[in-house]
Length: 362
Ligand SMILES: [Fe+2]
Image (cartoon, rainbow, N blue to C red; front, side, top):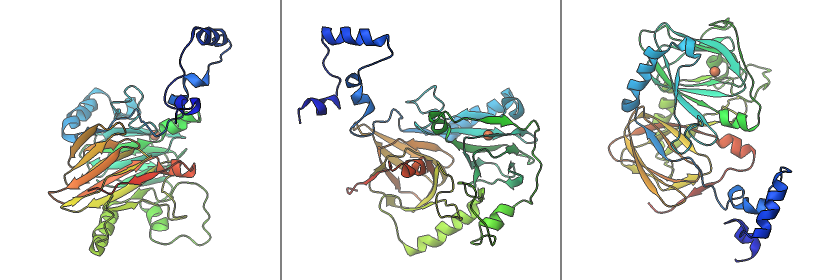
């Protein structure tokens, strides 16, 4: 195709002095010619500025602990080292649509109560026994637990244990920013008042039961801690069926038990088991995916839409990211591996945008 319309999708229109003069004249009226930028706005396929990247936990853990000596959790409000995608430096995001960071709470510290319209997930990476309190209920966090802070829910964190706690934060900050719908407020106290016993939400909503007469009143799952022990047991039991997805191994998504939809309205969360000796087929999707390695070692080969390839070699507690529309192949030659991951998939699916392409070659 060589007609002018298809060319404008790939490159700007050619410049002439007459056109330049016109652009200059309309500039003062806050007008600009679409045909000069159409190719950057309406692309033939996603070309994310985000890059594949890996944060090796052993390398960054000293920095996280150093931050602990530099500033208190209370002074920082949230003492987090942001995982900035190398293609999006200075923009506080790990993909174009999602923020991620590693948060540290030392023994005896509190991160004061506040709330905001951004939804947050916590995925526990190191330490055991710190708590987060959400809307009047406290939950004790252990490695591999997936904890939710819904939009506009009061939350505070504290560490009554004797060891440092580190968790991966994932928030929809860039999505909320795109809508200019940010609100936030402090409670004015370190801790919120608790109104329910520890474990109440999990028992009430996460045991295959719901209270009689329960009506959905929010888009986020009422279960706000999905304990790793339960998730791991489910994967271990299911592996006996030997039903492996060629692209994903055994991959499950966290759901809201009230409606079967995603546990969070904007962020999809997943846990997958890749057995020893498994090598996936290449697969790509429009949601950039952030992985946190829970168990095991392996490699992920990422091929970007422009054809460049990068091999990521990961182990426990590492975080890595596969941007939108990049091919990814996972391999676990040396042993089983368990990967937690999250992406903006529910947002894209609600808008009818999400696509996946599954490759055939091994
Ligand atoms: Fe927060």
